[in-house]
Length: 451
Image 1 (cartoon, rainbow, N blue to C red):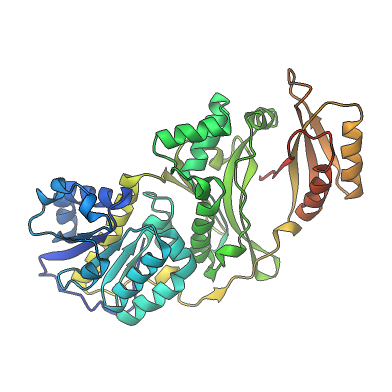
Image 2: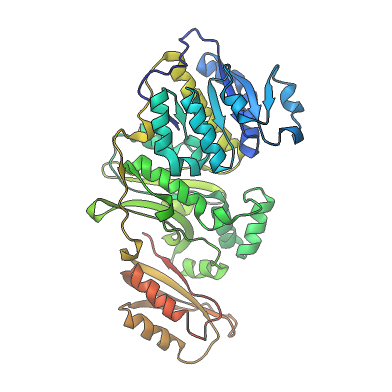
């Protein structure tokens, strides 16, 4: 999605301009894909835009170790450098595409480029989630465009849809499956009864998961994305560090067996919703959702975002959320939209969807009331259910049902309690007490039911 200032860009060249210079910083998976897609689609882009996107420079810290013969053979006189400053200061570069992974470097590149009047496109979700308002302010002061569509859901144009297509809506909530890695793992566990470890290993083999998957499987990646979605939907800056995030590492194939008995499935859901007192409730956690729910149909390494509006109801947007090519399409779409404004000299859209901002006031997640799924794995002994029931009763929590899959080992016997609606903080205290029982073979797993 593009974000532009309200005044005319200083780089505007008028309708007769024949080309717009592009500099790409970062040649990892997304950076290399962006360059390749640009070269492959260049004629189509020129037909749509009316001028050429001219790749002037590329940058990578590892530039000396990269084989760029495929690039040098197709682009004449391209500048190749390990120093991003050479790209940002290049007078032939109109649009800087920042695709580095390191937050500190990305912020330095972004602020320097914008301060110098260069238009900027970034795919760095952490940068936008934590410093989005700073970037918007810098772009306004310099009269430079800012594109961020690739930060959320890869090639799925959800940010553009929120800001443009649904600009007249009053959103009540936004819920998303925002990480293709975790969704692939969960659907593999569901379809094939794979363990978490096996599904993760397969995701890594297929290139859906990084060698260090912590940011994905612990919910950190989705936390940045839901912070950005909250900014677009509610005009509120949400401190990323204050968003509760839980991962999927404790989920077992048996949980899907129980989920199916309840006509449910399990997804890692990032959610932001309006709560009482003009607060927002924001979270990232695995939840039990109905198998008929729109988000339940999002499978594999796909992303899905459900926008709930006061007037328009539900709007569901799905698409490929991971991988170099889908993200490259989003990056280049931002570049094209910025280029159109450069050519026409038109005023851009309102930055991040709002002109007036406020700091988000977050509602404590512990006060949310919901029914819960509680799975225990025990060394089978008489009286276990009675002891667990007693603990729950002391915390004023009622049991709805007790489920036990047949054919399980007595030394590690899983069974499930579904709990009637209760405050999450009460459930959390009860589960901490249950976790101290010596009969437990594994820590308890608790997930809310989400309708």
